[in-house]
Structures are given as structure tokens and as C-alpha cells.
Image (cartoon, rainbow, N blue to C red; front, side):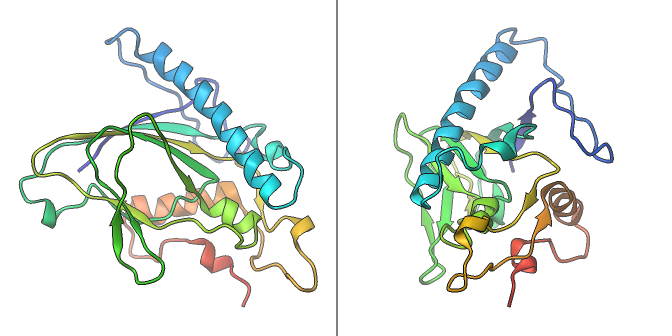
Length: 228
């Protein structure tokens, strides 16, 4: 149900040349769109770095411990439009999922639609929009880095029967070549690593091939790297 437009830095080029190069195709109108999106992207990126520093310090690590993973980041902004649906109980704006990256910073209008799955009983809880605020999702990468001290939230988007909805998620993702694994400083005999390492670029490509192309294969998740 969502009409999506993804905004990426114009200079984006993945380190792994096997991955497709993505270039923004800016519309001619409105003429201010590109400037507004790029300025917004720069500022929400600053916010994401600050959030990442707070997470790092909460784990007892130096504030900039994770910054080096984002030197050639593949972060993106998506512009979402959810048209009204006369039978919302029969449709979803976005199906249930967990964000595979590090952080998601979500701006939304006053029309509710985001729902988060409560871990205790599996019930879907509607997230009420708060004016002039962001919703922050911890992604799978932070869950692995923290060795499960943080957990990415499963969420979905439902549609409205009468009103359209707009949202702007910023996906804060590291470089394609990043090897994701529990941070060494957090691992010891009492707290062994709970995940095998994986390559972020390959993980993302396999997620897209399995899920976005709707192939009859199990969609790759971080639980596939869980050490049992």
C-alpha cells in the first residue's frame, strides 16, 4: 500500500563492486526537493551519530566506538505515502519485520499506523504519534554488536480507512564491507558471543533477494547466525 521514494547520497558507491551502484534520480519539480532532502539527511545523520554514541556509552564503551563502521555508510531516506484504504483490515501498509541496519530514525505525521509487537504476549501495540518528535528503532546490527543487550523491535504499518499517511524513515547503515559481530570488549567467559560474524553487504543483498523478490526461500535473519 505504500508509495516509496528512496533518497541516497549522490556520491554513493558501494565498496564491493559486485553490488549495484545507486544514484538518485531527482524530479524537476518541486525544484526545492533535492536541497531540502539533502539538508534533512545531513542533520538526521548527525542525530544518528549522537544516538549511537549514547548507546555505546550505555554499554560501557567509548562514545565513538562504532563510528568507524560508518566511513562509507550506505544510509538512506525513504519517503512513504500510504493512501487511505476502504478495507484496512484486509491490507497492510508494510508487513511485519525487523530493521536489519543499525538505527532507524522515523518522522511521521499525525496519522497513526505504526505498530510494535509486544514481546511479552505477541500483541500488536499502536504507536501514538507525538508532535515534533522522532521514533527511534534499534536495528539488528546494534542487537548483534551489543550481544543481545539491545534488541531490535518487530514492527509493521497498518493503513487508515479515511486518511492518507506520510512518514520519512532514515536508515542508518554501516559500510557494505563491515563485518558484524558482537563487540570484543563485551565478550568474556561469563558473557560469550551469541552470534557468528557476518558480512553486512552480503547479508543485505540476500535479504533483498529473498524477501523483496518474494522467492520461496526463508528470508535471512540474524537468528540464522545465532550460536546455540
